[in-house]
Amino acid sequence: MTQHEKRTQLMHLLYQYDINMKLEIKANYLSDASLLDELTTITNYLSEIDAIIRDCLTNYKIHRLSYVDRAIIRLSTYEMNNLKLDPSISINEALNLTREFSMLDDEKQVKFNNKLLDTISKYIEERQ
Image 1 (cartoon, rainbow, N blue to C red):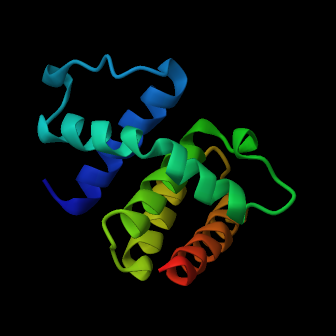
Image 2 (spheres, rainbow, N blue to C red):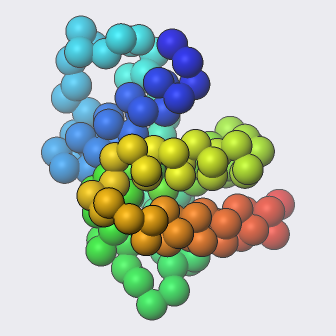
């Protein structure tokens, strides 16, 4: 499984978790059972991840983000904050997911997510 495929599945799982608010995901639906472990880890840090996102949103509330975009932003924030992944890699992957799955057909959501994730990466860097 490529990193992009892994991120795509994690984004789908975070989306599903956000809607259901529980981790009742059958392992046989996953192409890689370790994804459930990673999802559990991400959800354990969700309050910290959401706090970072809230601190970086300007004149916008986290609940106004679509489920898809919230999942993408959470995954990228987790990668940058907890996995210490290079922000340029994480942001680029997040923007690719936005282009692939966001509800908007134009670049408006891509620009919004790019600006937010750039702000988040700077926020994380300042805290370290």
